Length: 465
Image (tube, rainbow, N blue to C red):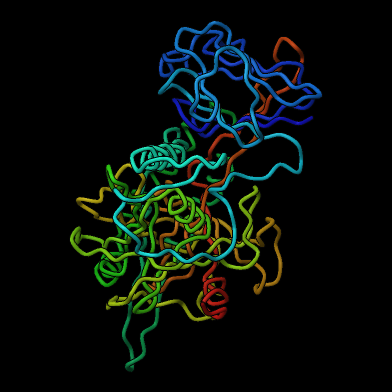
C-alpha cells in the first residue's frame, strides 16, 4: 500500500511525503520521526506524538500518550482510531495537521471536486444548517468553524513560501509612428531577461549552498531592469476596478481566498480549483461573494459557478480555469488577448499579475498587489514542447500565493494572456526512517509559477451556462 501524508497545517505546511508499504509512520517533533514537525514552531505536538499503521482492516492512528492528544477529522481519539483516505489528523488541538491519502483509487478531497454548480444567495449565514456524513444536523456556528478550518487548510501551504524579489522590471517602449502603435523592446533588455531565465533554471537544480548566490544575481538583474522604468503603471490603473477578491462569509467572519477578474457584466474568471474551493465552502453553509478591488463596500453574491472541461483536482496539472456568475452590474472589464498575442509569447517576455496575496486578502481593505515578472518557458500541460496551439502552460517568475490564484496575467500591451494557477515543487529525498522506508518531501520553488493560457478561458466561455 502506498500512503501519502500531506502536511496541511503547522510550520511545515505544504510538504508532501510518500511511503510505499510502510510498517509504521511516526509523527512528532523529534527528527527521527518519518513525519518530523518543526521542533520550535509546532510546540503543540509531542516529540513522539503518534504513529500510523496499516493492516487488512484499514489504516489506523495510535496516540503515543502525547501531551495534547490526537484528533481525527476534528474529533479527539481515546487511543486508536481508523483514518479514512482523505481524512485529517491533528496533533494537539491547534497543532500541526496532516491529510492522509492511500491506495491509487482514493477519492480526492472534496475541495477539488469537479462539475458545475449553482450557488444561491440563500438565507443569512446565521440561519444555515448543514448535514454531516452520518445524517446528523449541525448548527451554523459549527458550519462556520468547519469553513474556517477549511480556509486554514487552503492557506496552510503558503506559510513556507518565501517572498521572491518582485519588480522584475519591464522596459516597454511605445513609439507612435504614422498613427500605428509599435511595441519595441531594447535588445539589452531582452538579453537581461534571457539571462534571468537561465539563472532561474540553474537555481532550480543548484545545491542549497549555491542558491543564495544565484538569487543575488537574479536580484541584481531585476534591479537593472527596474531602473529603466516600469511599464506596468498604466496597466494597473486601467484594470484596477476589474479585479475582485473572492470571499466566503460565515456567521462569524468573512475571509478572502482567491482572486477573480471581470470579463463581462455578470461573469468573472478565476481558476478551476478556486471554483472547487468555493463550491466546497458553499456546501458547508458559507456564502460566496466577490468584493471589488479598492472598494470594500462593493460586493456581489456569486450565484453560479463553472469549471472548464478536463479539470481534475486529483493531482498533476490539468486544464484549470473557471468562472463565477454574479447578478450583473460589472462595468470595468479586462481585455482578453487575441490569438496572435497569446500565441506569440516567448521566453524572456515581461508579464504582470494582479491579485490578492493570501496574507493581504483583507476583506475590509481589499487592495490587490500588482507584480511584474518574466516568462520562463511555455509548454504543454504535461511539460513538453509542442505546437503553439498546444503549449498552454505559461511558467513565470512573479511571486504568487494561494490568494493570487485566479488572478489575470497581463502581457506588455495590458491584455490578459493567462490565468494564474499554481507553482512547481520539487521532490527532495529526506532519507530513511528506522523501519527503512523512504520519504519524499515536496518543496515549493520560488520563481517557478505557472498560469493557464487564455484560450482555455475562451473555450470555457464558449460552453455557455
